Length: 154
Image 1 (tube, rainbow, N blue to C red):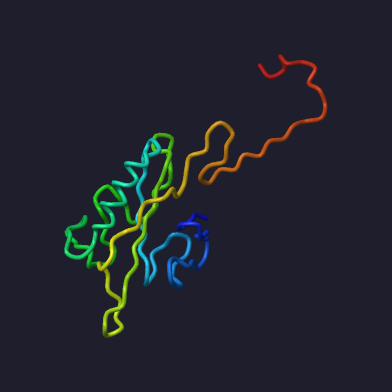
Image 2: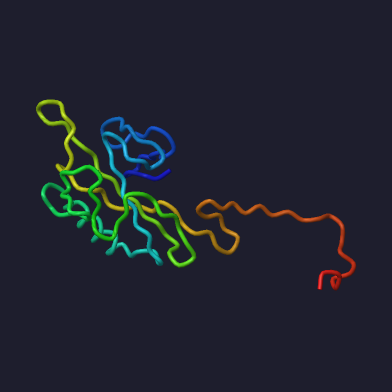
């Protein structure tokens, strides 16, 4: 779950973003929404997130994207971003996500590129020091009886 303003948004199943329902679930692209992802080794500063957000909001129209596309195309991905989540690693402990929505033209056809991507938000983190992280849940248990001989497992 993440927040758009003060509104919680569930990303597990169909989600509601802004003013209407969006055909998407679990961070997958849908007919009305496209997701992008970026892994980083450290948590970005607010200034960096704002810069990313400003850059992503301008990814629209005939601006060039990766793979010789413009943002009028479906699956147009900005430089340094990926179309699918890569998953966090020991070296890149944070993965951020952003999305954009399609709009309807006067003929009722879905078109892309009228708006850019939203300000990025954290998608997953790497668990360390007994803290849960992406795909990891630590469960601790102990044994009630005392261990008398610590040298047994040498």
